[in-house]
Amino acid sequence: MKFYLFLITCLVAGQAAAVISVQDDAGNTVVLPRAAQRIVTLAPHTTELVFAAGGGDRIVGTVGYSDYPPAARDIARVGDHRQIDLERIIALKPDLLIVWLHGNSERQLEHIRKLNIPFYYSEPHKLDDIPRAVLRIGQMMGTESQALQSATELRRQLAKLSEQYRNRPPVRVFYQVWGRPLYTLNGEHILSDVIRLCGGENIFAKLSVTAPAVSTEAVLMENPEVIITGGRKDRTKAGLEIWDAYASMPAVQRGNLFSIDGDLLNRAGPRLIAGAAAVCEKLEQARSRRSEQR
Image (tube, rainbow, N blue to C red; front, side, top):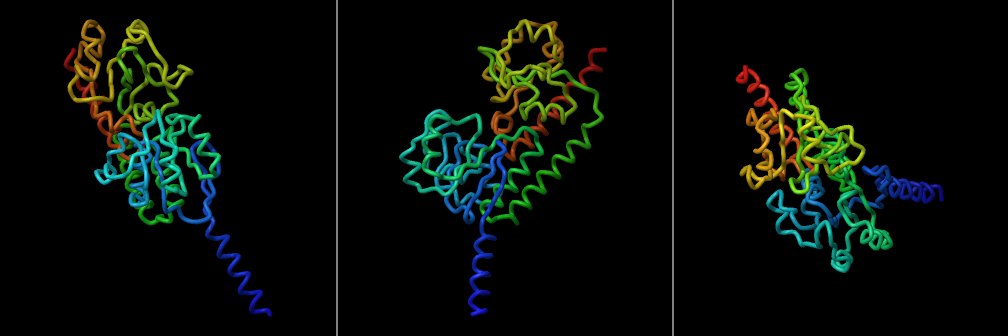
């Protein structure tokens, strides 16, 4: 009898140990009865996070523009950030959804939530949140070893950038999300953390709205030394040509209008750290041009 009681106790303990509990970026506790095997990612950056954590082969559905790494291009599509095919998601029978907190339709997600599919909300606000997300996602999949390896490398890259640029002279930066109408990002967005890492100052960091519309006049009043946008390398297509008419602004006068690969800047996944390195290089280039103006 004692043996059976002992066996039952071990089984119960084993089941309890199998339960996985992590906190997502919305502060919610996500509880899984076992490691996730069938995952749907509803944003390109969440797809990249899952691959970095060692679970790319567990993604059964994703959304448009989830094209990195190349293996992601072969995953079935369930819509995009504006429109999700609910029936397709249900048919895929996922045991975990990884969702962009402010990038997916809350109305549609509410319908999925009623199906009791676990949600992990992803919205990194700091660069340090990216390796942390890799570790959490690895924990949900039971791929902690590979997730730790990826997170350690990402943290190494961040530490190197921090050491290299922490004491560099400040550079006033305008980050242009879109040209017509003109949008930027405030200090709460992860791109501001990128700018800070590089020794830059986001000229609109104090605005209360995360992605506010600003006027041309407001930008001119702030007189930025650098303007950066995430787009194609062709500056005209990136929308920076709107500033050519303002030759007296330091960013224009010194040729500091920079377009960086949008996939590196617009996705809060592992490649954003490579994007940060590119931003740091551009700010250092702007610093070097100060002496050329003397």
